[in-house]
Image 1 (cartoon, rainbow, N blue to C red):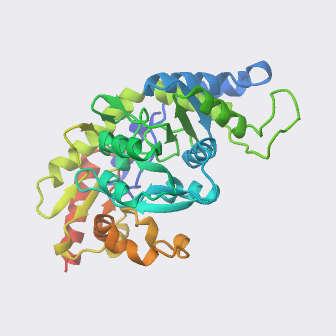
Image 2 (cartoon, rainbow, N blue to C red; image 1 turned 45 degrees about the vertical axis):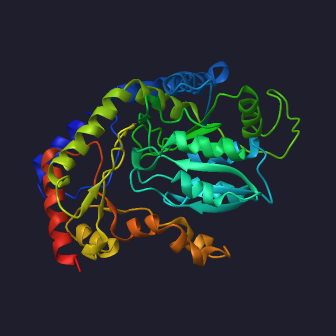
Length: 390
Protein backbone atom coordinates (compact mmCIF):
# COMPACT_ATOMS: atom_id res chain seq x y z
CA UNK A 1 0.00 0.00 0.00
CA UNK A 2 1.39 3.42 -0.95
CA UNK A 3 1.82 6.30 1.45
CA UNK A 4 -0.99 8.16 -0.31
CA UNK A 5 -3.35 5.20 0.17
CA UNK A 6 -2.26 4.97 3.80
CA UNK A 7 -3.01 8.67 4.20
CA UNK A 8 -6.58 8.19 2.97
CA UNK A 9 -7.17 5.28 5.33
CA UNK A 10 -5.95 7.34 8.26
CA UNK A 11 -8.48 10.07 7.42
CA UNK A 12 -11.25 7.49 7.41
CA UNK A 13 -10.42 6.37 10.96
CA UNK A 14 -10.46 9.74 12.63
CA UNK A 15 -10.75 13.36 11.56
CA UNK A 16 -8.78 14.30 14.65
CA UNK A 17 -5.89 11.93 14.01
CA UNK A 18 -2.53 13.64 14.75
CA UNK A 19 -1.05 15.31 11.68
CA UNK A 20 2.74 14.97 11.39
CA UNK A 21 4.89 17.75 10.00
CA UNK A 22 6.31 15.91 6.99
CA UNK A 23 7.16 12.50 5.59
CA UNK A 24 7.99 10.56 2.41
CA UNK A 25 5.94 8.87 -0.28
CA UNK A 26 7.12 5.29 -0.69
CA UNK A 27 5.57 2.89 -3.21
CA UNK A 28 6.17 -0.70 -4.26
CA UNK A 29 8.71 0.57 -6.78
CA UNK A 30 11.02 1.70 -3.99
CA UNK A 31 10.46 -1.54 -2.06
CA UNK A 32 11.31 -3.61 -5.13
CA UNK A 33 14.49 -1.65 -5.88
CA UNK A 34 15.72 -1.93 -2.27
CA UNK A 35 14.90 -5.65 -2.17
CA UNK A 36 16.87 -6.12 -5.39
CA UNK A 37 19.83 -4.25 -3.87
CA UNK A 38 19.61 -6.54 -0.82
CA UNK A 39 19.83 -9.56 -3.09
CA UNK A 40 22.29 -8.32 -5.70
CA UNK A 41 24.26 -5.33 -4.37
CA UNK A 42 27.30 -7.20 -3.11
CA UNK A 43 30.68 -8.54 -4.33
CA UNK A 44 31.26 -7.31 -7.88
CA UNK A 45 27.98 -5.33 -7.70
CA UNK A 46 28.90 -3.49 -4.49
CA UNK A 47 29.10 -0.13 -6.26
CA UNK A 48 26.39 -0.77 -8.85
CA UNK A 49 23.51 1.08 -7.20
CA UNK A 50 25.45 4.10 -5.92
CA UNK A 51 26.95 4.51 -9.40
CA UNK A 52 23.56 4.26 -11.10
CA UNK A 53 22.09 6.79 -8.69
CA UNK A 54 25.03 9.17 -9.17
CA UNK A 55 24.79 9.03 -12.95
CA UNK A 56 21.02 9.48 -13.01
CA UNK A 57 21.03 12.33 -10.50
CA UNK A 58 23.89 14.13 -12.23
CA UNK A 59 21.99 13.93 -15.51
CA UNK A 60 18.80 15.18 -13.85
CA UNK A 61 20.49 18.23 -12.32
CA UNK A 62 22.78 18.87 -15.29
CA UNK A 63 26.18 18.33 -13.65
CA UNK A 64 29.17 16.38 -14.99
CA UNK A 65 30.05 14.76 -11.68
CA UNK A 66 27.80 13.50 -8.89
CA UNK A 67 29.06 11.76 -5.74
CA UNK A 68 26.64 9.91 -3.45
CA UNK A 69 27.23 10.92 0.16
CA UNK A 70 25.94 10.24 3.69
CA UNK A 71 24.42 13.73 4.00
CA UNK A 72 24.35 17.26 2.65
CA UNK A 73 26.53 18.33 5.58
CA UNK A 74 29.29 15.90 4.65
CA UNK A 75 28.99 17.07 1.03
CA UNK A 76 29.63 20.69 2.02
CA UNK A 77 32.51 19.52 4.21
CA UNK A 78 34.24 17.78 1.27
CA UNK A 79 33.56 20.75 -1.02
CA UNK A 80 35.29 23.13 1.40
CA UNK A 81 38.24 20.77 1.79
CA UNK A 82 38.60 20.27 -1.97
CA UNK A 83 38.47 24.05 -2.45
CA UNK A 84 41.37 24.47 -0.03
CA UNK A 85 39.40 26.35 2.63
CA UNK A 86 41.04 26.14 6.06
CA UNK A 87 42.26 27.96 9.17
CA UNK A 88 42.44 31.72 8.79
CA UNK A 89 39.83 31.81 6.02
CA UNK A 90 36.33 33.20 6.25
CA UNK A 91 33.28 31.68 4.57
CA UNK A 92 30.07 33.63 4.16
CA UNK A 93 27.04 31.54 5.11
CA UNK A 94 23.30 32.05 4.96
CA UNK A 95 21.93 33.37 8.25
CA UNK A 96 18.58 31.59 7.87
CA UNK A 97 18.95 27.83 7.48
CA UNK A 98 19.73 24.60 9.31
CA UNK A 99 23.14 24.51 10.99
CA UNK A 100 24.30 21.72 8.66
CA UNK A 101 24.91 24.37 6.00
CA UNK A 102 27.40 26.24 8.19
CA UNK A 103 28.89 23.68 10.59
CA UNK A 104 31.37 22.33 7.99
CA UNK A 105 32.98 25.77 7.89
CA UNK A 106 34.04 25.19 11.48
CA UNK A 107 35.04 21.58 10.68
CA UNK A 108 37.76 22.85 8.33
CA UNK A 109 38.97 25.48 10.79
CA UNK A 110 37.57 28.50 8.95
CA UNK A 111 35.29 31.20 10.40
CA UNK A 112 31.62 31.53 9.39
CA UNK A 113 30.29 35.00 8.60
CA UNK A 114 26.50 35.17 8.36
CA UNK A 115 24.78 37.15 5.61
CA UNK A 116 21.18 38.37 5.69
CA UNK A 117 18.32 37.09 3.55
CA UNK A 118 16.16 39.08 1.15
CA UNK A 119 12.40 39.46 1.43
CA UNK A 120 11.67 38.57 -2.20
CA UNK A 121 12.98 35.00 -1.84
CA UNK A 122 13.82 34.45 1.85
CA UNK A 123 17.23 33.35 0.50
CA UNK A 124 20.67 34.90 0.89
CA UNK A 125 20.95 38.54 -0.17
CA UNK A 126 23.76 39.16 -2.67
CA UNK A 127 24.28 42.69 -1.36
CA UNK A 128 24.67 41.37 2.17
CA UNK A 129 27.25 38.92 0.82
CA UNK A 130 29.12 41.79 -0.80
CA UNK A 131 29.10 43.82 2.42
CA UNK A 132 30.60 40.90 4.35
CA UNK A 133 33.51 40.18 2.01
CA UNK A 134 36.96 40.79 3.54
CA UNK A 135 40.48 39.94 2.37
CA UNK A 136 40.08 36.62 4.27
CA UNK A 137 36.88 35.57 2.51
CA UNK A 138 37.40 32.39 0.50
CA UNK A 139 33.92 31.05 -0.24
CA UNK A 140 30.18 31.52 0.14
CA UNK A 141 27.56 28.87 0.96
CA UNK A 142 24.16 29.82 -0.43
CA UNK A 143 20.95 27.99 0.52
CA UNK A 144 17.83 27.38 -1.58
CA UNK A 145 15.54 27.91 1.40
CA UNK A 146 12.30 25.91 1.61
CA UNK A 147 12.50 25.08 -2.10
CA UNK A 148 12.97 28.69 -3.29
CA UNK A 149 16.19 29.99 -4.89
CA UNK A 150 18.12 33.26 -4.49
CA UNK A 151 19.17 35.61 -7.28
CA UNK A 152 21.87 33.35 -8.71
CA UNK A 153 23.02 35.98 -11.22
CA UNK A 154 23.68 38.51 -8.47
CA UNK A 155 25.52 35.91 -6.38
CA UNK A 156 27.67 34.96 -9.38
CA UNK A 157 28.56 38.63 -9.95
CA UNK A 158 29.77 39.04 -6.35
CA UNK A 159 31.70 35.76 -6.52
CA UNK A 160 33.48 36.77 -9.74
CA UNK A 161 34.24 40.23 -8.37
CA UNK A 162 35.96 38.81 -5.29
CA UNK A 163 37.18 35.41 -6.51
CA UNK A 164 34.92 33.39 -4.20
CA UNK A 165 34.20 29.68 -4.35
CA UNK A 166 30.41 29.20 -4.51
CA UNK A 167 28.74 26.20 -2.84
CA UNK A 168 25.03 25.87 -3.54
CA UNK A 169 23.22 24.08 -0.73
CA UNK A 170 20.19 22.75 -2.60
CA UNK A 171 19.20 20.36 0.21
CA UNK A 172 15.64 21.68 0.32
CA UNK A 173 15.12 22.38 -3.36
CA UNK A 174 15.30 19.32 -5.60
CA UNK A 175 13.38 20.19 -8.75
CA UNK A 176 13.35 23.97 -8.24
CA UNK A 177 14.57 26.16 -11.09
CA UNK A 178 16.10 29.61 -11.58
CA UNK A 179 15.65 31.01 -15.09
CA UNK A 180 15.22 27.50 -16.48
CA UNK A 181 18.23 25.96 -14.71
CA UNK A 182 17.73 23.36 -12.00
CA UNK A 183 18.67 23.86 -8.39
CA UNK A 184 22.07 22.28 -7.85
CA UNK A 185 23.46 23.35 -11.23
CA UNK A 186 25.02 26.58 -9.93
CA UNK A 187 28.37 27.40 -8.35
CA UNK A 188 31.61 25.45 -8.12
CA UNK A 189 29.85 22.80 -6.03
CA UNK A 190 26.31 21.95 -5.10
CA UNK A 191 24.95 19.68 -2.38
CA UNK A 192 21.65 17.89 -1.75
CA UNK A 193 20.05 16.16 1.22
CA UNK A 194 17.96 13.00 0.96
CA UNK A 195 16.94 12.95 4.62
CA UNK A 196 13.58 11.34 5.38
CA UNK A 197 11.92 14.76 5.46
CA UNK A 198 13.07 15.79 2.00
CA UNK A 199 11.02 15.70 -1.21
CA UNK A 200 13.24 12.89 -2.53
CA UNK A 201 14.58 10.58 0.15
CA UNK A 202 17.06 7.80 0.77
CA UNK A 203 16.28 7.84 4.51
CA UNK A 204 19.59 9.52 5.22
CA UNK A 205 21.98 10.56 2.48
CA UNK A 206 23.13 13.32 0.20
CA UNK A 207 24.80 14.16 -3.10
CA UNK A 208 27.79 16.35 -3.94
CA UNK A 209 28.00 17.69 -7.49
CA UNK A 210 30.52 19.67 -9.51
CA UNK A 211 31.41 20.26 -13.16
CA UNK A 212 35.14 20.30 -12.35
CA UNK A 213 36.66 16.85 -12.91
CA UNK A 214 39.72 17.58 -10.77
CA UNK A 215 37.63 18.79 -7.84
CA UNK A 216 35.39 15.73 -8.18
CA UNK A 217 38.42 13.43 -8.10
CA UNK A 218 39.72 15.20 -5.00
CA UNK A 219 36.32 14.82 -3.27
CA UNK A 220 36.14 11.12 -4.11
CA UNK A 221 39.67 10.64 -2.79
CA UNK A 222 38.96 12.43 0.50
CA UNK A 223 35.61 10.70 0.93
CA UNK A 224 37.15 7.21 0.63
CA UNK A 225 39.92 7.44 3.25
CA UNK A 226 42.47 8.76 0.72
CA UNK A 227 43.61 5.39 -0.59
CA UNK A 228 43.82 3.69 -3.93
CA UNK A 229 40.95 1.24 -4.38
CA UNK A 230 42.02 -2.28 -3.55
CA UNK A 231 44.88 -1.17 -1.29
CA UNK A 232 45.26 -0.31 2.38
CA UNK A 233 47.88 2.38 1.66
CA UNK A 234 46.40 5.65 2.93
CA UNK A 235 48.07 8.83 1.76
CA UNK A 236 46.16 11.24 4.03
CA UNK A 237 43.95 11.16 7.10
CA UNK A 238 40.62 11.54 5.36
CA UNK A 239 36.96 10.56 5.73
CA UNK A 240 34.48 7.72 5.31
CA UNK A 241 31.75 9.45 3.32
CA UNK A 242 29.77 6.94 1.31
CA UNK A 243 26.21 5.89 0.56
CA UNK A 244 25.10 2.27 0.86
CA UNK A 245 23.61 0.27 -2.00
CA UNK A 246 20.28 0.08 -0.18
CA UNK A 247 20.05 3.87 0.16
CA UNK A 248 21.10 4.37 -3.46
CA UNK A 249 18.48 1.90 -4.70
CA UNK A 250 15.80 3.78 -2.77
CA UNK A 251 17.04 7.09 -4.17
CA UNK A 252 17.10 5.76 -7.73
CA UNK A 253 13.47 4.65 -7.47
CA UNK A 254 12.48 8.02 -5.99
CA UNK A 255 14.33 9.86 -8.74
CA UNK A 256 12.42 7.91 -11.38
CA UNK A 257 9.24 9.26 -9.73
CA UNK A 258 10.53 12.79 -9.16
CA UNK A 259 7.98 14.42 -11.48
CA UNK A 260 5.13 12.80 -9.57
CA UNK A 261 6.67 13.80 -6.24
CA UNK A 262 7.08 17.43 -7.24
CA UNK A 263 3.56 17.64 -8.65
CA UNK A 264 2.21 16.40 -5.35
CA UNK A 265 4.22 18.99 -3.40
CA UNK A 266 2.86 21.73 -5.66
CA UNK A 267 -0.69 20.44 -5.18
CA UNK A 268 -0.37 20.52 -1.39
CA UNK A 269 1.06 24.03 -1.49
CA UNK A 270 -1.80 25.08 -3.77
CA UNK A 271 -4.34 23.95 -1.18
CA UNK A 272 -2.63 26.10 1.44
CA UNK A 273 -2.37 29.03 -0.96
CA UNK A 274 -6.11 28.84 -1.66
CA UNK A 275 -6.85 29.07 2.07
CA UNK A 276 -4.12 31.39 3.39
CA UNK A 277 -2.72 33.20 0.38
CA UNK A 278 -5.08 36.17 0.57
CA UNK A 279 -5.10 36.47 4.35
CA UNK A 280 -3.90 39.91 5.48
CA UNK A 281 -0.67 40.07 7.48
CA UNK A 282 0.40 36.51 6.53
CA UNK A 283 3.10 35.65 3.98
CA UNK A 284 3.44 32.21 2.40
CA UNK A 285 6.55 30.89 0.65
CA UNK A 286 7.64 33.49 -1.90
CA UNK A 287 7.37 32.78 -5.61
CA UNK A 288 9.83 35.18 -7.31
CA UNK A 289 9.20 35.79 -11.00
CA UNK A 290 12.47 34.14 -12.13
CA UNK A 291 12.15 31.10 -9.82
CA UNK A 292 10.07 27.93 -10.09
CA UNK A 293 9.99 26.74 -6.45
CA UNK A 294 9.73 23.09 -5.47
CA UNK A 295 7.47 23.71 -2.42
CA UNK A 296 9.34 21.41 -0.05
CA UNK A 297 7.88 22.87 3.13
CA UNK A 298 4.84 25.13 3.44
CA UNK A 299 5.89 28.12 5.54
CA UNK A 300 3.91 31.05 6.95
CA UNK A 301 5.41 34.27 8.30
CA UNK A 302 3.03 36.63 10.19
CA UNK A 303 3.65 40.35 9.90
CA UNK A 304 5.55 41.69 12.94
CA UNK A 305 2.66 44.03 13.74
CA UNK A 306 0.57 41.02 14.80
CA UNK A 307 2.92 40.41 17.71
CA UNK A 308 2.90 36.64 17.13
CA UNK A 309 5.76 34.54 18.49
CA UNK A 310 6.31 31.10 17.04
CA UNK A 311 6.97 29.16 20.25
CA UNK A 312 3.50 29.58 21.83
CA UNK A 313 1.92 29.24 18.39
CA UNK A 314 3.66 25.89 17.90
CA UNK A 315 2.63 24.75 21.38
CA UNK A 316 -1.02 25.60 20.69
CA UNK A 317 -1.02 23.71 17.40
CA UNK A 318 0.59 20.68 18.99
CA UNK A 319 -2.09 20.64 21.68
CA UNK A 320 -4.54 20.23 18.81
CA UNK A 321 -2.63 17.28 17.38
CA UNK A 322 -0.96 19.23 14.56
CA UNK A 323 2.82 19.19 14.29
CA UNK A 324 4.28 22.58 13.41
CA UNK A 325 7.96 23.45 13.06
CA UNK A 326 9.71 26.76 13.71
CA UNK A 327 11.02 28.93 10.91
CA UNK A 328 14.79 28.62 11.19
CA UNK A 329 16.38 30.63 13.98
CA UNK A 330 19.17 32.92 12.78
CA UNK A 331 22.33 30.83 13.03
CA UNK A 332 24.19 33.68 14.72
CA UNK A 333 21.63 33.59 17.55
CA UNK A 334 22.26 29.94 18.43
CA UNK A 335 24.23 28.80 21.50
CA UNK A 336 26.45 26.88 19.07
CA UNK A 337 27.94 30.21 17.96
CA UNK A 338 28.02 31.86 21.37
CA UNK A 339 31.78 32.24 21.14
CA UNK A 340 31.61 34.38 17.99
CA UNK A 341 32.96 37.82 18.97
CA UNK A 342 30.72 39.50 16.37
CA UNK A 343 27.59 37.69 17.57
CA UNK A 344 26.08 40.72 19.32
CA UNK A 345 26.01 42.77 16.12
CA UNK A 346 24.22 40.29 13.87
CA UNK A 347 20.67 41.27 14.82
CA UNK A 348 21.37 44.76 13.45
CA UNK A 349 23.38 43.53 10.45
CA UNK A 350 20.81 40.91 9.41
CA UNK A 351 17.42 42.46 10.27
CA UNK A 352 15.33 40.47 7.77
CA UNK A 353 16.49 37.09 9.09
CA UNK A 354 15.87 38.12 12.68
CA UNK A 355 12.46 39.65 11.94
CA UNK A 356 11.08 36.68 9.99
CA UNK A 357 12.21 34.17 12.58
CA UNK A 358 10.08 35.66 15.36
CA UNK A 359 6.71 34.34 14.23
CA UNK A 360 7.43 32.16 11.20
CA UNK A 361 6.42 28.48 11.20
CA UNK A 362 6.33 25.46 8.88
CA UNK A 363 2.94 23.79 8.46
CA UNK A 364 2.38 20.06 7.82
CA UNK A 365 3.69 19.30 4.33
CA UNK A 366 3.97 15.52 4.13
CA UNK A 367 2.84 13.53 1.11
CA UNK A 368 -0.05 12.11 3.14
CA UNK A 369 -1.73 15.52 3.33
CA UNK A 370 -5.26 15.80 1.89
CA UNK A 371 -7.52 18.79 1.37
CA UNK A 372 -9.43 17.78 4.49
CA UNK A 373 -6.23 17.80 6.52
CA UNK A 374 -5.18 21.14 5.06
CA UNK A 375 -8.61 22.54 5.99
CA UNK A 376 -8.12 21.38 9.56
CA UNK A 377 -4.60 22.76 9.77
CA UNK A 378 -5.63 26.15 8.38
CA UNK A 379 -8.66 26.50 10.65
CA UNK A 380 -6.56 25.66 13.70
CA UNK A 381 -3.73 27.92 12.58
CA UNK A 382 -5.94 30.96 12.00
CA UNK A 383 -7.63 30.41 15.34
CA UNK A 384 -4.27 30.09 17.06
CA UNK A 385 -3.06 33.29 15.35
CA UNK A 386 -6.17 35.16 16.47
CA UNK A 387 -5.81 34.08 20.09
CA UNK A 388 -2.05 34.70 20.29
CA UNK A 389 -1.76 37.97 18.32
CA UNK A 390 -0.57 40.80 20.45
